[in-house]
Length: 564
Image 1 (tube, rainbow, N blue to C red):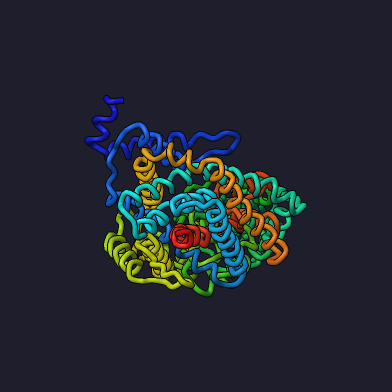
Image 2 (cartoon, one colour; image 1 turned 90 degrees about the vertical axis):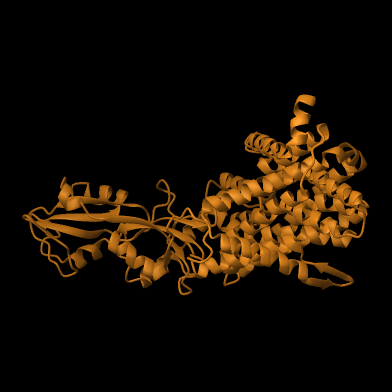
């Protein structure tokens, strides 16, 4: 291994790129839908490389990457975190808090029962609860303990080893529980539960996709036939006949003249009108012999726009799309194509509830889209530049506050720490961005890079530094740690399942999505979607994942204090 050891020892930064590359390569491999993901594979790759080759790792570089990751996590979930504090969101907050608290209590109890040291306890929690970010907060907490630097390194290595042991089974258990075990314990038919939610929201599964008044649209030109039903009717009257389908008349050709219609404009024989609406409506209703479609490029040359609107209006938050459409006088000719809540696509239907911080992709004639923007929020204009002032000062001030604030918990005095401070700073900046979309702008691509590369690089470096201790630590706590991790994973899932169903009375398919979110397991949510043949589980997932990300990350610091 000398040919590899010498350059990696001299240039340790190359080892980080090697570990991340191998981690992402292995993380993309799945067996029957199950995979470890790039972060855990980066940790395993780092452990293997560190065991084989002596590579120095910079503590400053590790901390820098981890703070970037934590700030980006807070920034991305900030709008949802505060939005869930209202209305029905309280039930999802309660579910997430109960599940996370049970997870912490179980991890502490198992760690004490097995007489684990703070390092193994931190890894037991991060792996058992499948939250890799807790590796960093546990490691930071260990470094504040009064002991030698060599002991610090040994315990931090134990965090990485325990996480690697527990995460594999933890991830598999969450996926199987949410998609198979949970439904059987509740005796629930996921497909039927999903259909109930879809019916409540107004999703019609008898047609492909989500078919509602808020789907993508087309514009087509039709000639008004002599003696046709619309001859002599006003534009407002014609549109009212198809109010359920939301078909609008955008422009009229009368002879050689192009007319911008008003509500009282009366249609005449021979007029050629441009109708906008859902494609299936135009083809199914107007294209089945009721009107003659014509090709008129000049008439159809209508400026259209597709904009992403960031919802920041208080009066919009918590209302359904149907309510918003009824209340918005400016909704005419505007169609909703997609809803993004964080990085998750939300089903589009009449009963879908819009939350502050959602991004709505709307399309229609440009003036109509501009009117809708004024009523809903602010346009998200793609940007390539990052507000480094907010990024740098936000992380600095958040980390500084984390160092200064000490929270008394019984006989303990627990400092927040730089990692939790950076996380909370990201939450605050993300929330302020939802209120003032032009504040603290960081492109989505930059956030994705900070989250993905920051965490994978950090855990890879933790693995490299822990590699020399790997076999010793594994022999010290291997089998008992594995079974302890199974307990730590399973008990919170059971608590969330029965509490959510019989106390909060949540729909089974939404509940299982929420349980996956509280454990920050996107793969488990996808498994619920597959088992139910419906996307609606994402509604429960999005209600808990923000809380889960914050609490489980903080738990890494707490378990070290409780066990030490």
